[in-house]
Image (cartoon, rainbow, N blue to C red; front, side, top):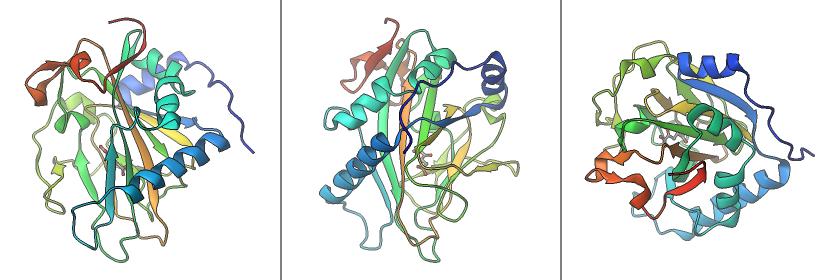
Length: 244
Ligand SMILES: O=C(O)CCC(=O)C(=O)O
C-alpha cells in the first residue's frame, strides 16, 4: 500500500533539466487511495456522458471537472506535485485546465492515437508560460498508449498545427524523429511545458488506458485562442499558489 508523503523539493539539477529538455518525470504523485478515487471518478464521468462520436469511438475526453469532483479538485489544487509545479512555474500559479483522457482498446486500429502537438497549439496562452502535468492512472507503455515527448522541442517556439490526419477533431504538428517514449507506473506523473511536442499512441492492449491531464499557468497570461481573455476571467481558472 503506497501512502501519501510529500515529494522532496526539486533539485537545481532537476529544474535545469526541465528547462533544457522541456519535460521532467516526477515519479509517484498519487498514493493508492487517491489513485483508486481518481480511477473511479474517471469511469464515473466517462460512463455518464453521452458522447456523440461514432459507435466504435475509443478516445474519450472529459474536461473541467474540479467543480464536479472533490478528488479531482483536491488533487489539482493540493496534490503532492503542487510544490514542484510552483518551483518550475511559480511563485504565482493558476490552474487553468484539467481533463481525463481515456483510450479504450483499439484492437489493431489507431483510433485513439493523439498525434504530435504542443498544448499551446490547442489552447494558446500568451505568453506561453504554462506547464502540463500528465498522470498515468494505470501502468502505461508503448502497447497501451503511453506519452511520447520530443526533448528540447520547446525551444522551437510555437509551431504550426493542422488538422490531424487520424482524427479531424485533433491537431497535429510536424515532429521529426527524435521522440522518446515515457513508460510510467500507475500514479506517476510527468511535467512538460506548453511548447513541448508530445503525443500518445493507440491502445493495443485489452484494457482501458485512463490518464489525467492538468494544466497550470502564470495568472497574467491571456487566452489567445479565446479572444485574448485574461485567464483569471475564466471560471475554471483557480489560483493555487502566490497571488495574481
Ligand atoms: O492522455 C493522453 O494520451 C495525451 C493527452 C494529451 O496529449 C493532451 O491532452 O494534450
